[in-house]
Image (cartoon, rainbow, N blue to C red; front, side, top):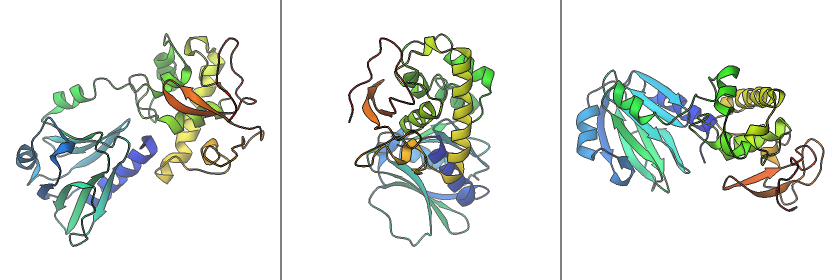
Length: 270
């Protein structure tokens, strides 16, 4: 699933392909990815307008025009592709934007779980993002600790909650918790000040490394690089990794590096 580094990569695609260019034509090949706007309304609002700025908040991407804003969310399988006008259309290209300068921007999505929204003005953008917490890449330590304070349930669930901190997904949450040596099942309310500080530092370090790659990189020295191997072992202490579900999501962690708090159950060895 696209997470913050992926969407930051898509922001780079949008900026390089479309920023400063005029939308000449929009072809909606599958209206199932449009939310609250028809294909006709989308064309009327954006054709003839120039893309002035590419912004991201959490997992949302915003294409600004100085008027209406196009908001994109990529769900589990979405992506953004810059292509030449004569390049064959792929089966899952849902919306095609023909731009000045012989560029074509494509919203591609196999499963169509999210899609595109149109916000007519700043108040509409604010309403669209109203449920989002501070962006994980921009939040300072005080804001991060405030977002965690008073939250119930497992700390992994809090990290995945976009209303707490926006942008983190399953891979990032597992990676950050492994680096911080915290059990994903530990209650957020039980974290100490030192725990929250360490969690913030590891989130920042993980994002700084991941964002330039445009993904959560499966490096051998990362938990992400070991989680799906046939016999997964911790890249730090070499203990067998465990796999279970926490906050409804498949979760991988090291029982030696991330011991469970007393009274929690974190599953069996894989």
